[in-house]
Image 1 (cartoon, one colour):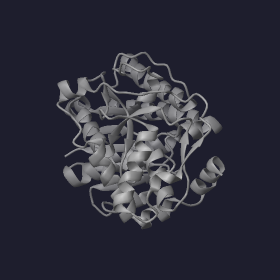
Image 2 (cartoon, one colour; image 1 turned 90 degrees about the vertical axis):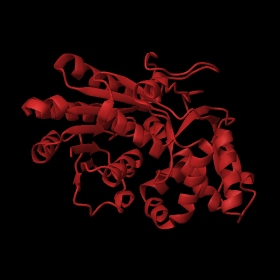
Image 3 (spheres, rainbow, N blue to C red; image 1 turned 180 degrees about the vertical axis):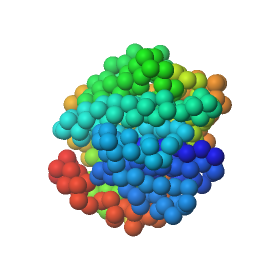
Length: 350
């Protein structure tokens, strides 16, 4: 039984990882989260009282607090998911992204390095620092081809540039100091507990409430969609079996245009929530955002061949589960669709 320190464990992907570790393994988890607007402990209510779970409200940029967490909890591995992650927010306010994604990652790496150097024997040999990143660091694809682990970095937004910087820091700490690291870059995630500023939950909730469904530009930007629980399973596998110093791309083999995604949500809602159908009458087109990458697509061959992972959900099965979850969990939705989120979303789509 190991103790896993997970940063950003109250976020969308992080909470899925925490829930899986507690529900599916004997491991202990220390969740380190600042609880910004997108961090929500309600997403962990089902496991919050489990004796193998501990929560620390800590900013990863606070070196003293991060070092205290390592001293007190003595983790056997780190999974670093804490990040500012929304592209639109990075365009209007890049400073938070530089601070959290770059300075925060540096602070965490230094604390992990000091902790790792203090370990001995098998504990030191088995220690892992798993850095979780995004396919957006690779930039934009044309009509053909896929992002591989060897694709050159060409980030085009403040968000992706900050994540690219954090990837490079992790690589440098491995090659310079020997810190045992693995890195993963994933495609667009979707699923339950997703904060409603992102496309899929935003469209679901707007449609249910009879609001417009905003689509950037012509809706022809393409993304590869990955169900969050599939991603969490992949992350756990890479932590356990990934080769040190290696990067693994994680994708769902589900390329869809934004318009196709919204139409699929509307079709699913027409069946599961027929009030207001057809929901696609609510689709509207808004001015495209600056630097909007045309297409992302992940080649997940390496993690499939080397570690035996493949997604369990298709886009259709995952989307249906996602829509059903939002319809059934109105209390969670009410808990997050207020305050900072409402102020921001009203500003964007007024």
